[in-house]
Amino acid sequence: MAGFSFSVLIGLTLGLMLTGAIAGVLAGLLGVGGGIVIVPVLIVIVELFDIHDSIAMLLVVGTSLATIIPTSISSARAHRKRGAIDVDILKGWIPAVFIGALIGGIASKYIGSGGLTLIFGVVALIVSVNLAIKKTITLASAPPVSRISQSAIALPIGFTSALMGIGGGTLSVPVLSMLSVPVHRAVATASVFGLAIALPAVCGFIWAGIGVEGRPPGSIGFVNLPAAVLLFSMSVVTAPYGVRLAHSLEPRKLKVAFAIFLGLSALRMLWKYFG
Image (tube, rainbow, N blue to C red; front, side, top):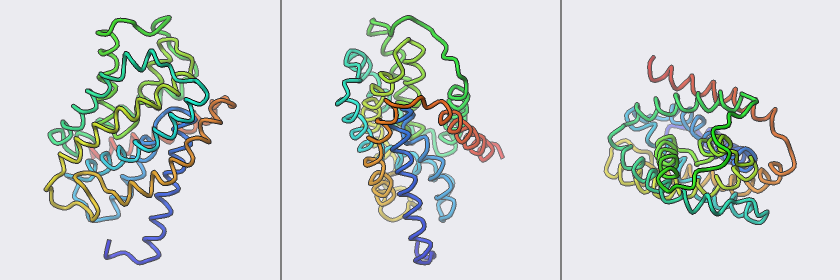
């Protein structure tokens, strides 16, 4: 960062805080998880610095996951006050979500930066299409009650979310909606999944990055603390506002706009991987 002027660093700081603010609102409003916004922005930011491609995406994902911890707590508390969280789903899904995220965090060391870029690009493109489609596909009239079936759904959600640096909402809200869970309840419940994903996954990314050369100042493993603090300092403030909007608006137009943004970001990452 020494090669950047004071004005550029101020601009970077404000940009990170604005990103955190937007991520917080979307986390509460759409249940997509702030990381789905943060990761594409951080990818652009790391390109401004002399960070090797072999660790760039690892740093982005690890840092994004760190911001999800306080954001999820803020969002979950706001949803809990409204009584919207489905406790029965949490009891059945949380253990597998946690284990899946822990495995994902540890696996990041072996998958590498390029693999994470590919995973994010493919899954984000699928999610963007799902957001753009108006009709929700129904797979069942209710979530499964079998612990094996619950784990079979929840573990991949935790694993994939950890590798993408996102909260559980991006993947779990569409899945819960397909299982006939009302969208407001799905969004509220997913806010707790974010915490269950981020905590073990961050530990995995810290472990994976210990002793690795080329990390920017302020990094613990593959988590950059200054960037994480700037991001979540705003996301924890704005997440409750997103929750209020979620319970008072039909966010269809915003979903479509966000789907376009996410789709373009996904295509950019795929181009970066294959290009």
